[in-house]
Length: 67
Image (cartoon, rainbow, N blue to C red):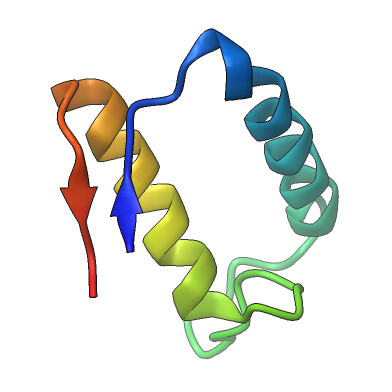
């Protein structure tokens, strides 16, 4: 998947998604053996790729590809 820098056009969508994730994570114990980081139909790996890809694309101002 290709990730492009976060722009003003999609910034509010990212803020909304991150707020949802914050609500899911709030109050969860930080236990090393608990591997379920995100609760979504896409799963942990897909969400981790989205977070890493979009943040790296934004910070580097380059399109990032993660397979």
